[in-house]
Amino acid sequence: MKMSKMFVQTMREFPSDAEVVSHKMLVRAGYLKKLTSGVYNYLPLMWRVLKKVENIIREEMDRAGAQELLMPFVQPKELWEESGRWNAYGGELMRLKDRHGREMCLGPTHEEIITAIARDILKSYKQLPVNLYQIQSKFRDERRPRFGLLRGREFIMKDAYSFSTSQEELEKEYKNMWEAYTRIFKRCGLETKAVQSDSGAIGGSVSHEFMVITDTDAGENDVFYCDCGYATNSNHAVSKLPEAKIEGDWSEAKIVDTPNTKSIEELCDFLNIPPTLIVKTLVYIVDKKPVLALIRGDKPVEETKLMNAVGGLDIRIATEGEIDEMMAVNGFDSERGFIGPKGLKEYNGYPITVVADETVKDLKNFVIGVNKKDVHGVGYNWGTDVDLPQIVTDIRLAQAGELCPECGKPLKVTRGIEVGNIFQLGTKYSKPMNAVYLDQNGKTQPYIMGCYGIGVSRTAAAAVEAHHDEFGIKWPLAIAPYHAVVIPVSTKDELQMKVAEDIYKTLLKHGVEVVLDDRDERAGVKFKDADLIGFPYRITVGKGIADGLVEFKARNEEQSINIKPEDAAEIIVTAVNEIK
Ligand code: ATP
Ligand code: MG
Image 1: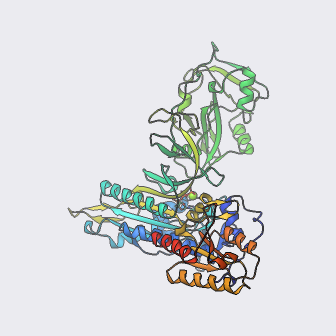
Image 2: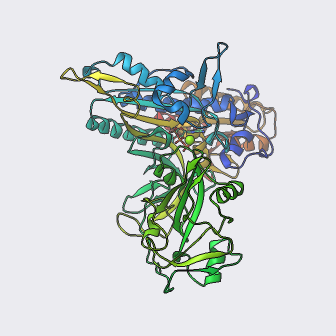
């Protein structure tokens, strides 16, 4: 490809609406163009990268014995009603109607469709196990599309679904996919950590996420890990707490004035106690229903855990207005900071569910809100002064400094980008959708399913997060849009042009994807663009050619070297052959 003909326009500045490196660089280097919120045009450079990621995935999925198909992007409501997800899936599901008024949705994932295919075709145990996958654009009306390709509304995903006859067979396939994923991300030049996770809206029990570890804002997930091998997502992390004071010094339960103590900190200062003596009450709305979360004053709530504890799909903290109303409906006049579970019965037509974190159950003589402004109950105990809720479970967000549940050493925390995940679904879809086969005894059995996703476009963006410097992208060779660029310093110099063209042709002949920067531009401009676009190798033909030498530079190395053109070409050809 000649640079003068290449459909690419680099920009001088980073786009103003981009927050993370991959978004900034992909737009500035001419890979991406936004169409509307969370929806991007993949320009030719980007498309080359995406196709490479796809091909690596394809090769490894095929190698692992999975078979590729392609399902429609538009899906009918009826199948989603069979699985029960038409109502359960929240605002992310983009619903629409056709001209006959029939309801449809844009595919955010394909469990329903694949299960419907399977039940028509996989009728006997002899046909199982099977693993089917596709690579396709998905649409999710994300609440907060952001970070460019990392969290788009339209994005490319590889989704695979396995059908087995037993849990053991499923576990074997799960391991098979785990290994395929490890190879895929490694070939894409990414180091990943597999962490235990919550299964969320997809459901099932065992699941793992593959995280690219990054200490930047782009990592939306907290990853907790320990040298002993324990590694988990924040919504699944458990930890042991270090020793703390959990018994107050009051000799009896009473209500005391605590003016203007809306925050835990203010309350601690006023009463001169540590936060570990306070039962904090937070008000949430889960799928429209009111939920109170009780947790020790020094600990935050993990919202996914809380949502799962009450079996919901959507969770948010209640607004001030909602809290006011809840107080009024239950005969109180209170506000955030002074709320407690006692006497709160209903809201919005639903009974109020109270969930206590495990951290509160052992507290004695503690402090708690009593739904009256500027006072708190102190010296309270469960049973005598206030009831311990029926649901006591782990709803706590683990924090750095807490201890590994397996070996007791301090847990480490870092941030990660989830590039893929694997789930053991079991019969979550096959049972409600009546997707069954005949077993060896002629009895019908639901398939034991697994599903396995990879964010293709997110993986490409994660590679930029992991590999860049202040000047631009440093693509891993296997997913770079081109392997190399050849830059004649002066296009007017006949010898330089001739040598550059010869190298270009030699590289092409050996299967190297190479760009000849034949533009009549200053060398500095060409170098800048080369660094920004991120070609893994650069050969510069300048004055040194009088001595038979060119300048060779690898993008991920500081120094360039002066070598013979044929030697430079050979290094590149060898490297490219290694990734094939
Ligand atoms: P997340 O927690 O990041 O929203 P998810 O759990 O919703 O991800 P899945 O439904 O399992 O993800 O989708 C499989 C893969 O698709 C994810 O591992 C991720 O790499 C990718 N993915 C999910 N949502 C998006 C998105 N909005 N933009 C880009 N990639 C995405
Ligand atoms: Mg999601």
